[in-house]
Image (cartoon, rainbow, N blue to C red; front, side, top):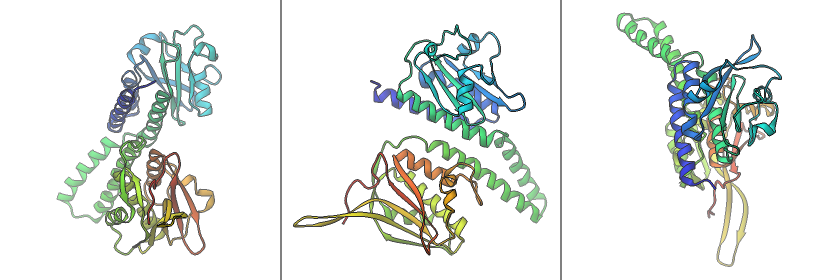
Length: 370
């Protein structure tokens, strides 16, 4: 049985490494930060990361923990069919082995690695985390490893071209140019740099939102929706709260969730969009002394053109966008999943897109409302 303290320590270490990943300037630095954190997070000595070379059709080792670097006496390259690591990358599935020898297909048949977690990083590469002991990884370790791989995929995929340092340099030169010249084209440059900065900040938010919610409080839907609306800055748009409810969640994250749904409506339905928020009333109970309506969640609906049914799942993927950074709804989904909730999209007659947030493994509204 893993103690709550041990789980908390793993999550704290994962949070710290995520912050470091976001400040890394190159792919190489990102890989080195990730593998150097393996001993702290998982208390095992072996961690290594391979990036995919599409021209050579192979996975090339990019970074490794000190123990792993000493262990591999020659450069290890994974190619189709030569290891379980390539199999995990090719299938896009996390593979776990309590006993590597029993699993078969290992790169080195005489390896001293006893148990292993093999993590694909999207189509960018893969990561191995290993131990010299059998049964070294429990369900919590594997879940934390998945989070690490997800964060790596998003960071490598979005900031793999060294955005941070050039952005800072460009902003510095822009300010100098503005002091010396009054050129309207510089405003266009400033807008582009602001967009890049927003993109980087949203990637950071996306990575942070993967952590499960631990501290929940009672939240009034109407009050929080009005706060979120005031942060969106859409003077021509209208917010209507038709039915409030008491939510139970992380107030800061639910606020960000609502802000992102509101911004999505403004971006895709127009600056004069009308957005409606309300509780989803599902059933009614009554006794001799009272009658109670019960809600299982809430919805956010706009009067725009809606979202094509074939795109209902794709819109939550990082990078999907017809306008914006392509991360707003991905962040929404991360917040939903971190709460143990579920989100779906409906297109109703004479309305636009309707996002419905309902309970999954955890209730959205665990207490009744009148």
